[in-house]
Structures are given as C-alpha cells and as structure tokens.
Image 1 (cartoon, helix red, strand yellow):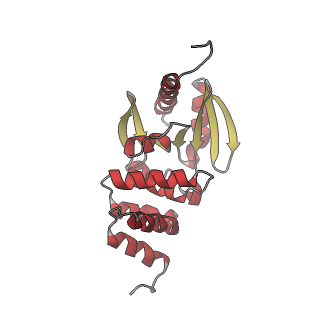
Image 2 (cartoon, rainbow, N blue to C red):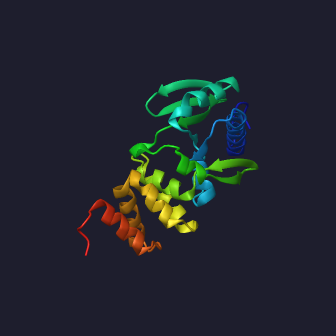
Image 3 (cartoon, rainbow, N blue to C red):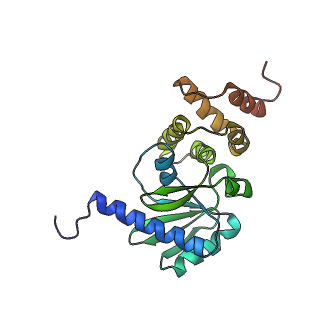
Length: 208
C-alpha cells in the first residue's frame, strides 16, 4: 500500500473513533443529543456508507454542544445559525443539527424515546426508529431518494409504534403519508388505520 493511502477499513475505524470522541464529549458535558442519519440507518435496517456523523440537539443546546466539541479538540464552525453547526476531527465531519426539515428538532417527546445501541463497539444514543422514519421522509436534499429508501428499510425491519409515528408525523404529514402509500404499493405492511388517520388529519371531512 502506498504511503498515505487509506483503506476502507481505515475509514471505518477513523469514523468510529471520531463518533466515540464526539458522543463522549457531549455526554460528559451534559448535552442531551441523539444520533440519526447513516448511523441510525445502519442499526435500524439499511447498511450504508457512514458519511457524516449526524447529531441532533435541541435548539437551546446548540451553542453549548459546539462549545463542548471545541473544548474536546474538534475544529468547529457556526455554519448556519438557523439549523446547523459543524465540527471536524481528522477530516471526519460531525453535523450538529438543531432543526431538521419541516421544523423537526430534539424535543422532550423525542428525547424520551431515545434508544441505546452498539455500533462497532461504541455505545450510541439513537432517535427512535419512528422519528428516524419521519426525518427521512421529510428530507428533500439532492439525496432524497436515499432518504426514502432508508425509511423503507426501517419500515421493513423494525416493529414500529405506529401511534407514536402518527403523532410525530405532524411535522410532515403529507410527506409521511406519501411514504407510507409508496410502501404499501411495494407490499410493505403498513396499518390501514395509520394511513386513514394521516389522511383524515390532512383532509378533514373528505374521507368516507
């Protein structure tokens, strides 16, 4: 191997190391957070390339989270004060996100549903799978196709709390309903009551 060449294994090891540094810093700093994005997708149903580390924090904790990462040795920047800050360590990017599309953020309800899993030997805190589905459904970046396939993988792999998903869908009911209808068209098992309730919430008085 030529000097300076980095293998896929090296990338994975570095990603995992930086993930551990970031989450440990926030935990020791007392900053509530949860992971979503590629790490949640990998653990809930769809193996994919790791990409960036996506950390979700409450808007009130955004500045404190960035300061905590800076104190831990990360390079940081207040990228866009309306929704995202960034931190880096040895070329690995950590997105500190405090408002997702459609106004989704780490509120008390989402925080109460955070799950702990193991990722490559690291203990991690993830948004609940239902919240991951909603976040993927409302995302509309250039990679929107990947977001939807990640959501579909979670629908297929996890026994969801559909009542909770319905409540969280208030942030993007049309998007979530569209996702569930698409899932049904591809023979995914989706409760009919969930589809009907979302439809009724969007179009009251038009069903039946």
